[in-house]
Image (cartoon, rainbow over all chains, first blue to last red):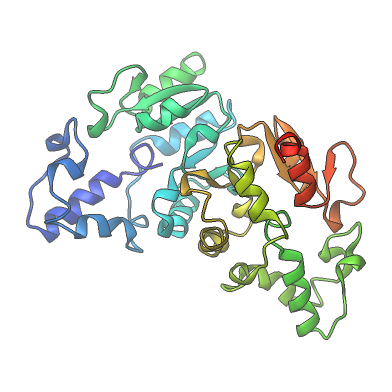
Length: 171
Length: 171
């Protein structure tokens, strides 16, 4: 979910730059997590953002994710799996966000988990290499600033690439 | 989770009997869901119980579940998967309940899902035959009033039987 269909990094930067008069851009994060660039100790609100009620509510949808996911559903059984257990207070907001932005995904096909090794699926599209390594099917790495140096997975940079990868013959 | 480690039926009956001056016991439910025995239309609060904030908080633990699960963790990788998407308002209460009663299960090994066909595991212990049919590993039916007539799965009636089944050689 985060960084693949929901733009959490953008919202983190908006809040950080607002609260600490910063000027960090996504480009500044290349190869790093936001926590590597700014010290949590000196910017405690950075971690609080994730726990605030409205953080997940306001996240933008990653471009083309809605259209391509809907198209994928015609050919594949699609589940959305979020590592929601890392921030248990986010359950309700994440669920509401999915209902609002991805109404074609039924509740039966939403999974809140911790370790994605528990998923039985052919493909997992994820920005987190740790999750892809635990996954038993084919892992596809969704490009994000923090995973720039990661190798060993097919990398996609946007949903148009996912569309070509899975649906090229029926476009 | 429900009916396997958490006694939701008992709490349903307590509330129903209290609010409607009823006298229904678990035995009365043999072969049925509670919804088959009492009409939801005439007892609207029955459905509301599941959505109330404190319902999942007060559930009793099914006898022996804590001890046996902890013992299973020495031999197996144990996940707790709950069909929580059926009652999305229950996420927080369910998570708190698990933290309190099953502290040895880490957050990484908790899954809130809808369709348990998405789980990759060797065994699934569940009271719901619909979930077991979708599951790709070996399904084990945990006895519950509503599944009395179900066949096709190995049935266990309590956690002592689960202990024998999985740990008989190391007891």
